Length: 253
Image (cartoon, helix red, strand yellow):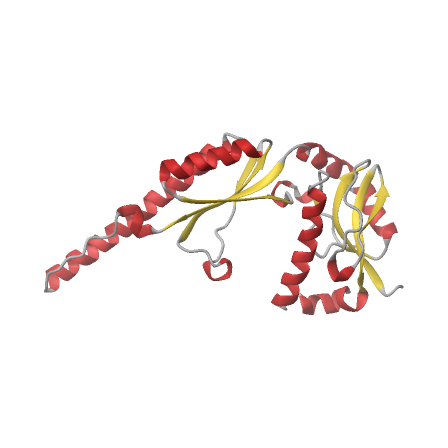
């Protein structure tokens, strides 16, 4: 048993030319591991931090987890600049290169199929953020006294909230529908926590789209922003996690 494990980042096709001199998690140099006409990109990490027991403890440490996730994503983003890649989840670990080669052979058909599907396509993220008060122009205030006025004000506020929710849902559906017309595939995701992401307003759409023509996507988003006067965030390209099926997600070995 060595003092190191092998951390796998993603899989590219044989013949792909990912960037050289990539440095990944824990400063490990990323190198290709070839098998079954595929190439996995992997690098060493210290067993003292990444074996099962210490890893379990580290996963409860948010700063450590954020750092490792950033290092993993940075490798994938650089690879994406040069090659189509099937991303592997963080903490996909192997005892050695032989174990990684066995995974490539075992999962060959799923990985090769995913590479064919992703070729020439990119994952982009879209978020729609709204201020509910702006959607309805703000609830009217009732300047009157007494119980009847109080009840009327509460009814007005409740009706305004319901109208805002309905308008927000309709906006999300319209934006999503317009972008799906351009996408090879699309998925709607859970809205991000406002405290963690720091966004303002309500996130009424958080979606990912697999796109063949990013320029067309950018133009459509600009059109939707102007049409709806909405805060629509476009980000990417990202490692295409949302369009890789569970069959291609290797389990640590």
